[in-house]
Image (cartoon, rainbow, N blue to C red; front, side):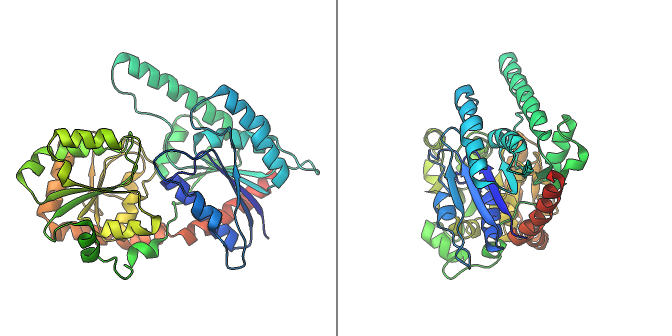
Length: 410
């Protein structure tokens, strides 16, 4: 039965959770549902998925309803949060009258679930309410005494808000088992609310190179020598993504081995600072920075890499890791959150303890010195990722989730 579905996401920037959300919208519209996407104002250097979502047409001509909520902002803002809940969200839900409200990210997740839970149509019924955990809102407690105290306070507020929102939600979808474990360990929600649905992606674009997007062609386009050992990242140039750790780990090896090159795909608020640091280290000319690239070009960028390095401090299950495996590229990543569910140490990649810069250096140099073995790790993970991370499989799972949520609401 066709449903009216409202997705709510805090920011429609270029990122993993946003791509997951847009692919869900597209797949559901293709299946005949009436799909709407609400989001906060888009700004900054990270890029946007607005054009893709707004320009989508299903095979039957259906579009995704796009709704910008002016008061939906990422940071806590009592005034804007008040108007987002009482005016923006309540009015939108009243106007659309959805069967399902599916929220994404922390701020949209709390306000969106609350607004949907109290909404009632003419018959007194509310929509089914679903939330997806794409990554943990909780920060690692580290640094000096003041920094630790601030982090504990922020984590306490997030925990309280998530507990509040979990009571106003039918089902909670995790992109990784690790997310469920972390939230349950904090007493958020009930065990029976949770289920894991892998974050879907367009796997065929990574599995099969299009004309002119093979490894040799892309390397030539980027000015990379055939003999270069390319350590790549596909991530925002932003806090928590680990570019500083890559520079720290590879500073000395890059001085002694001129074949090592860094390929940083993406942009962000930290770009100038990171490149200034590389300049001060004498390594700026060893970093290739194509900046933001269209989504359809990401598989080509990955094929130019020898390893995908992802030393992020916090993730749900980073999409770049299975994407690298799909493209036949070995990942080297920090063992945080759900990363180890795809990048399994010496099975499908190299997994390093969080913050272990020496371990990161060792893993990257191992990959340089063992090309056959690193390819074997990538090939071992490719088939599993093709089955687990298909966007059609994700939409199939969500169909069942929504049916259960609608049943619970009625």
